[in-house]
Image 1 (cartoon, rainbow, N blue to C red):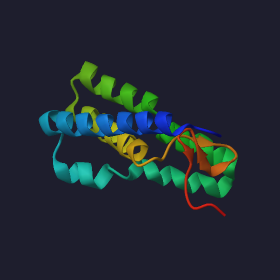
Image 2 (cartoon, rainbow, N blue to C red):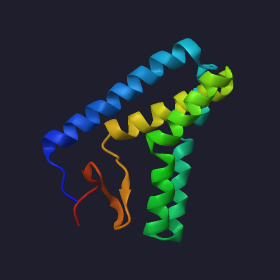
Image 3 (cartoon, rainbow, N blue to C red):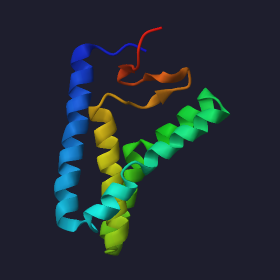
Length: 124
């Protein structure tokens, strides 16, 4: 999987912007920074799916690191007027933004190192 450096930079900046906006929105509408700190890394538990192989691992990881679920949860929190659901969605969005800003993209079934942002980790 090949991603040009310019495209990777744009996608990483996009992730950084999502992180910053999520933090600003959470500061206004969130449910406390303790909850944020406790739940921020929860989506990374999806890494355990890699014990079932790269195809299942990539599918579960991508489900936990796609903006689709996080945006749906956030929207649900807004529509229902449920502060906790809104906070969970914002935390999830912040996590995804952080990961993307750090260069961790959606995974390919080829293996964990292959992402939509390019190959991660040290070369073998």
